[in-house]
Each structure stands twice: as structure tokens, then as C-alpha cells.
Amino acid sequence: MRSEGRAGRAVACAALWLLNGAGIAATLEYPTKPIRLVVPFAPGGGTDLTARAIAQKLSQAFGKPVVVDNRSGAGGVIGADLVAKATADGYTLLMGTPGPMTINPNLRKNMPYDTLRDFAPIVQTTISPFVLVVHPSVPASTVKELIALAKQKPRALNFGTAGNGSVAHLSAEQFKAMAGVRITHVPYKGSSQSMLDLLAGQVQLVFENLPVVLPHIRAGKIRALGVGTRTRSALLPEYPTVAEAGVPGYEASTAFGMLAPATTPREIVGGLNREVVRILQSAEVKDSFGALGLEAVGGTPQQYAAHLKEELAKYGRLVKTAGIKIE
Image (cartoon, rainbow, N blue to C red; front, side, top):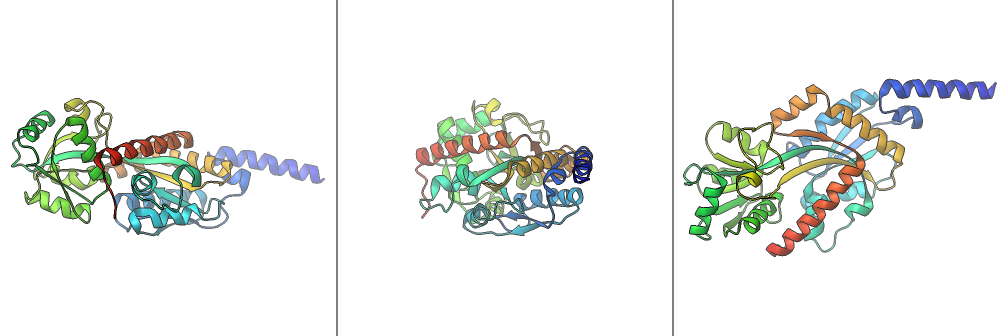
């Protein structure tokens, strides 16, 4: 009788696996309570918007709340550390970005966690291309023309960033090194301030996330010269990549991804991956992200892990070459 009951439950579980696609609820009875998705930054930014869009869809799929918890501070390190040290049961997850995952580990001496050791990558969710934009007064309509101008007038061109050691800063340092130009860094406390000064002509160029610059490009207030992704952005297909426009091999973007504490069961990680990938593939989600200047990605946990490892090495080289230090 007991064996028949177990067999019946097994059949039911198999059926549920097929119905929900991920199979996660069937094998582990997960989730049975609300899930917390930690965003290591304040509400309203690209990380937060990505997290909330996915959390809403996961809540619908699981029938349990997926609650976004904003824990900002120390460039994202506080929120990331909270997740690294959380119970590895799938109920505390992180929406990661380059800042806390791959840049700060190369800048800060006493990091409270190790990106590759203390986290289980689940999936890369979205990518935001960095865009090289200039003020209309800059006499350059292409990347090659900008490079020629910068070489003609060393240090005369100023570039604004969201701060010392930010993704924008490192993207510009990468451009400087690869293009062989000398332009002057003007750090601000956030991308909104650097954009205000770009619009006013106080700085001549910025490397910034597409969601930040897209409205100003469309309004004709600034001029885009190239995007930082390996291929042209579907959101700005008329603009070349920086690589094809004059700096071969250049790449700069912000990748968002979901992670869990390192020892989270593989079944939970795999199930979350399948469910989030399913969400990212829906036309509704792709369109909503596109309106924000974000591109849905997806892929396997292993692919996201490889991306993190590659980015850690890349930013390590840039920090060393540029001599960037955080006080």
C-alpha cells in the first residue's frame, strides 16, 4: 500500500515537472515560502528594474511571493555579502552586477566574500550596452574622428563618469588604453550628475549605460558614436560597435545576473535557471526590457560562471594598467 502511495506521488511529481517546465517544485517542493531577491543598490536603477520584472513573473510561476529587497551601500558590497552569508536554501538570492561581483574585488583590499567561491551563478538575465556619446559641440561624428581629435589635443577632452572605479570609468580607461589616447577623467557621484554636465557641455564625452543615454540620443541632445557590445545593439542598430568603428576588440557593457549562496542545491539552481530563462524568452518581457534599454540574455549557470571569471580577469588588468585606487 505504501509503495503504491509512493508510486502515485512519483507519477504526480513527474506530471508536475512537465507542467511547470522547471520541475523545481516537483522534485524539492520548492518554494514553500516567499523568496527574497536582494538588489545591492537603491530602487529605480537598472539592477532594480531588472529584478522587479523577473520577480513579478517568478511570483506568478511559483505561486509564492518573490520580494525585492534593496540593500545598498559600499558599491553593492553590502547586499552581495548578505547573500553570500545567507542560508543556502534558495530563499535568498542576489541580482548581481559588475560593481560588487567583478570590479570591487579588484579594487578593495578587504572584500568580505569571494565572487567565484561564495556564490552559485544561476543565470545572466540582461545586458546593458555602454555607449560612447559626445556633446554636439565636439567636432567628431565617428569614433575614428574622436580618436584623431584626442591625439591632436592630448588631455583637452574631459569624460564624466559615475565615480572612480565605476563601470563607466573602467570602460573609458579601456578605450584610452586600446585607442592610445589621453583624455581627462572627471568623476561624479552618480551617472545622473555626469549626464547633466555632458548635456551642459561641461564635459565632452561619457561612456554610459544605454538606458541612461537613450532618451537624450533620441532627442538629439547628444551624439552617439558607438556601442560597447560585441555586436550591434538591437535597440540602436544604426550605430556601429566601438570595435568595428575603430577600436578592434573593445567591449564594454553591464551584465546583470542572478546568483545564490555557493552551496545552494544544484536542483534549485537548475530549476531557477530554467524558469528565469523561460521568462526571459517571452516576447512581453523582451519588449519591456527593450523599452528600458536592456537586452534579455539567458543561458546556463556555467555560462554565467564563465562570464564572471572572464570579467574578473578583465577588470583586474584594467585596474592595474590604469593605476586605479579606491581610498
